Image (cartoon, rainbow, N blue to C red; front, side, top):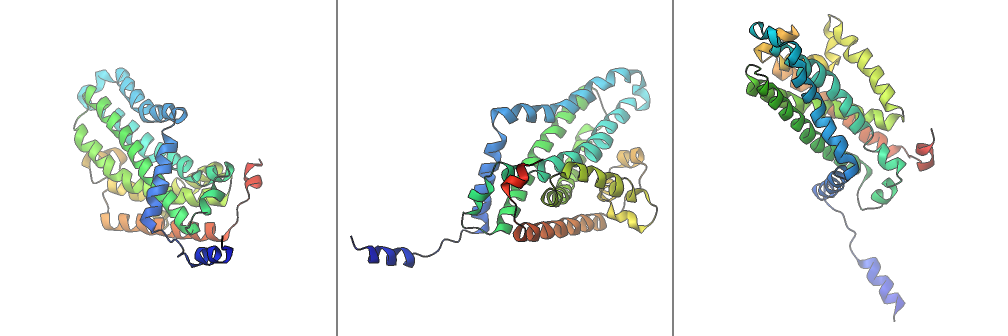
Length: 276
């Protein structure tokens, strides 16, 4: 065997540079397969069904109020106040905050990063894959809410759920981007995220000046208020959709760019990630 010719042949082989969509397809496949293990399926079902079931049984105490809209108000409290404005951000924090940290702790990032792709490509494809998965699971939750509301006779359930489905898309996008940066910044991203929520979303967001535009919750409420019953329920006047969408898109882009740069420049050590 001519070792020199073999070496020359190896060196002459063109380097492999997969395109971004090829990387995305591979990461997406790994993502949904990891989420559909038997261990996680039970957790998925509970996350999708628990709140809709609670909303269904909550109507039993408000049945006499049906003529004055008691059922609708109870349903809005579960779907909007509790789910969209509280549970959904926390869900994004746990999903996106841990999307890279989980691989770091399991020491699988090193293997994935030996593939012919750049670190920013790895991060963005992980984000997009988790984004798609979260959009699917949260949509299933709203469909379960729709069934509960229909069975309890809530008014105009289809239009309400359609509105929430539309608003949920940018909500997951922006909260996911914010949570991703928190996950890359610190191992205690859950604590940091809760502090951020109280300070920015609930604190700064309540200040009656233009600084409250820093709170994404206010922009989401502005979009939710386009549906008249929710405008009355939230006590918020519908604002400019263009302004709200632009602010959400700008924050998303800024946080994703910072996260991509941080993940590219910073080295994460497996043993450090495993230590408490």
